[in-house]
Amino acid sequence: MTFKQHIPNSLTSLNLFSGMVGIYFAFQGDLTFAAYCIFLAAVFDFLDGFAARLLKVSSEIGKQLDSLADLVTFGVLPAFILFQLIEQNTSNTILPFIAFIIGVFSAVRLAKFNIDERQSDRFIGVPTPANALFISTLPFLMDKFGNSVAFLENAYVLVCLALICSFLLVAELPLIALKFKTKQWKGNEFRFILIILGATLILSLGWAGIPLLIITYIVLSVVEGLVQKNAP
Image 1 (cartoon, one colour):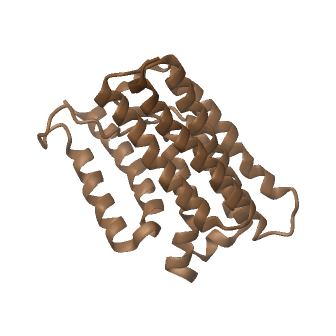
Image 2 (image 1 turned 30 degrees about the horizontal axis):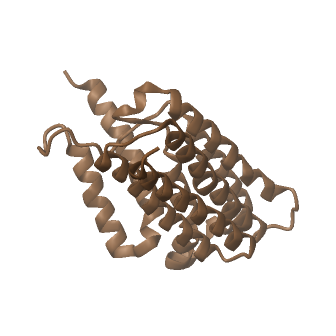
């Protein structure tokens, strides 16, 4: 293996390291820093793919390492964050463990992604990083809107979110991938709309805008699918 091939794998390892640090913070009940670890890991996750394409290197070990890192960072870590959120809002000692299905379904989703050739230009099911960002930024949303989203402090609502998120990870739901074959508006309308709305939400709401962005992403993907299905 050449030196160039080690660069993407090193970035993937930093993704994994960030996830493990985030799990530590989740255990400590510091969900803010746990979320920051997911943000940092998402940057490394982007950079490892970018570096592999830039350097024109790839390897089977890199592919496997990427999936294993993503499972920890975007599967196990958000499961622990949701576990803590549920535990903080219930006296039931069993209920919080339902959050761990996020990790299980993340593993299934990553395994499916590795063998599903349909996902070259579109995602089928919600990507694990998007799911992790949604879950980890729920506390920011609660802090930002307070009583307006007080229902998120209900343990049973959070359990329902765990079930819904797990389903969306493996659902046969085509979703937008930000892969532009051309720079023209035509054919990329929904990608451009998603970018514009995403930038608006994050600039106006900060990290609290991310859960709303993920919901917008799913809704836009469904609308795009319906438009394409009904197109002449």
